Amino acid sequence: MQFSEIIGQEKVKQKLVQTVSENRVSHAQLFLGPAGSGKLALAIAYAQYINCNNRSETDSCGVCPSCQQFAKLAHPDLHFSYPIIIKKSKEDRKILSKDYISEWREYLLDKHYFPELIEWYTKMETEKKQGVIGADECNQIIKTLSYKSFEGKYKVMIIWMAELIYHSAAPKILKILEEPPEKTLFILIAERQEQIISTILSRTQIVNIPPLDDTDLSNTLSVQFGYSGDQISGVVKNAGGNVLKAIKTLEESISGDYSSGEFREWMLLCYQRKYKELYEFVSKASRLSRARQKQLLLYGLSLSRNCLLTVYGRQDLLAINDNEEEKFTLNFSKFINEKNALEYAGLFEEAILHIDRNGNAAVVFMDLSLKTGQLLNTAV
Ligand SMILES: [Zn+2]
Image (cartoon, rainbow, N blue to C red; front, side, top):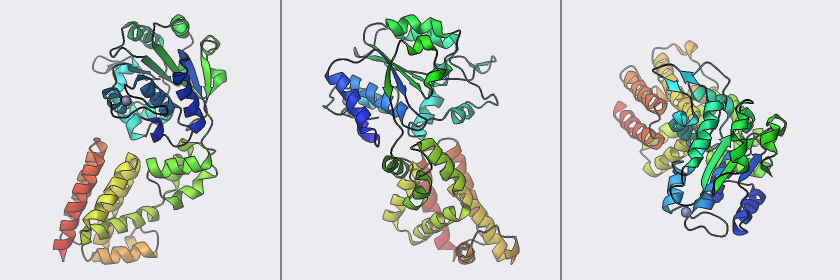
């Protein structure tokens, strides 16, 4: 994550860069700001900047070995602590943040570095909804930081949701927060100052992260999350600069007819085999959240059902939102009918399975587009 990949927060970036150029990187910093303001992305970009082998006056280079490892969140000197659901069964023993590291990396990359607590808990596949940064984790933080850095630069420990450091565990890390080993950087990330244990708070330097302004929020939603201008304009005003809130509203408000409009265009491209436009569609679709990708694919499934119902003259049973969609279904049923509807549905089911298993979305959508194109062209 380079600073240039983060939309907005220019003042914060400038300040952070300055701490490096003026050689006054404070060893324990608290990135404090409201939800959905991009705190974690800024922390990672900062850590990457500090460890870059070839940084400029404003940003990391993005290409050196260190930057490449940061991009995968796999730099050996980049460490994370975050609330986890502790699992102690023999088959599924998870007691430290690092036991969830692959889930964490995948989640962050999928969410463009905008994690959300409840969603993260569900990622850990558990009914329990209260995670914690506990005593074992605090011991582990000390242990991790006692090793020498791999690359001879900074070891960085990013603690996400520092509010959730367990009270009785907190004293363990006070000493290391105050006097960390050489070239160690703590970045604590929190939303609510009043909930942070005071002895921890007093040992950190606060970096205030404001909410995004409306323009930066709009751009984040379109560039990083692939939403269209029409959809975005409706939610930005009420989101208060909070990316997470905006996305939640968008996901809740996306009705079937939005999906269907987008879907109609896609199917037309498949049928006409317009490869250049298809490629553009696929790269856009691959930037959507997995939930949205699935929504699009599920629409394909419901369409195959609707086409069959149409073929059998049971339009009364159609689950359809508007006239446009009805017209499209009627036309489409000439292509997708009793002969091939199952095959068509099978393609979408397979794609959903791959998305669920974290397959490469671009590959999944392209593969599906090509197969669908073939199916549509041989249908008539
Ligand atoms: Zn670099």
